[in-house]
Image 1 (cartoon, rainbow, N blue to C red):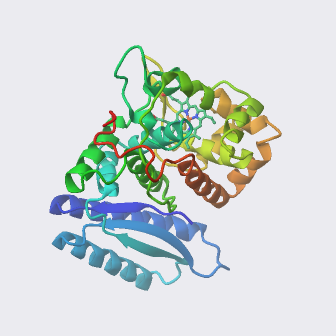
Image 2 (tube, protein in one colour):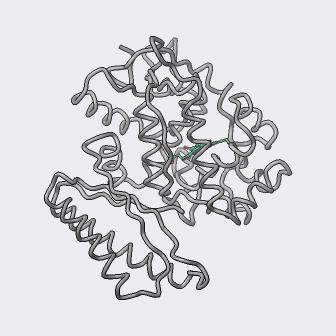
Length: 341
Ligand code: HEM
């Protein structure tokens, strides 16, 4: 089961507004879930992540209000079979907090961060090499590659890094910040949560010339596209599951941009796979997944069983974040994500 998350921060006004929105969301959710509920099933748990600043008075009150509202609701509507399981977390100014702030301002940021993670991890491993800026025109960095056109969210990671450095200098790598911001973006956009470990260190090399060897272009058929994934020891299931990331985000031309999934553009869900079945794919490399004998059955499974896609997607994201990581004395902890120390 997936869930949604609610953030209440120290600002009283914002906290109350978000509380109101969350209660409204709960109400809508509960109303819809009743109409869809199976009369033979016992109470079904719907996992909900709640981010609260528990040290602030409004955070504490917010949690009590949420719990009271839920128990009142269930008391009044005993026929509802769905039960919300609240998972409360206090971000305590950690990465999640900063990333969440950016997401509140721009709902397309999770997509930007998730794409950055993929483009980082497939080239030289998850070492934040994609974040390094070109310092000499003779030696362009990965960012200048045609495959990295339209990358967004680099400024968000740099801001999070500045915040982390101010609290705890020289300790958290940009590679870890990107990995955790991606985990949090996945949760924000899709209610999909997975655990990852920390300890990635930052690389010191970033070469434009290497990128297209590792990142597939958007016009390939399935077999050549799969080769890019098997080169990274990833399976056809992982490739198909990860492609579901295109259920959020944008494809940009010089003059305009289109939503990759225009049905639920900000929601990370299996709508992307549904769109492909109706020939609504924006990228050729996506549309071919629906017809190729290598991937069509996997796609059908994801359309019929969204929870299977969620599980496969989460597992593949964990695998992605472990690709060729630098540990021990390899690499460094950058001071700023855009430049080596
Ligand atoms: C299978 C091969 C893949 C190809 C050929 C591909 C290609 C593309 C292209 C062409 C775009 C549009 C970029 C633009 O116009 O600015 C895009 C966007 C995106 N891709 Fe992929 N991609 C692939 C796999 C993945 C994977 C594995 C992930 C994540 C796990 C991912 C996540 C995203 C996201 C989230 C966006 C939207 C970015 C934004 O809104 O800024 N892609 N991809």
